[in-house]
Length: 68
Image (cartoon, rainbow, N blue to C red; front, side):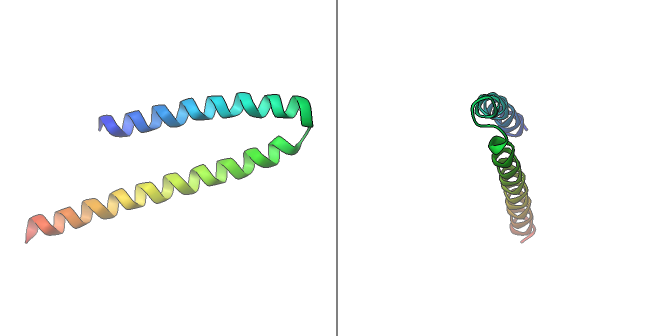
């Protein structure tokens, strides 16, 4: 359970740094950072979905091994 909390803490810290960087990009370049932000959010969601799915599959395999 601690690893999951650490993961979310890391993700939140990275998002805060990312938002600060996006603000600076917007200040200098205009709307381009919003496109980058959208792409980054989609990539993060896909990564989280994939990692969660992989963990669930691993747990199911461990349960099958325990039953045997």
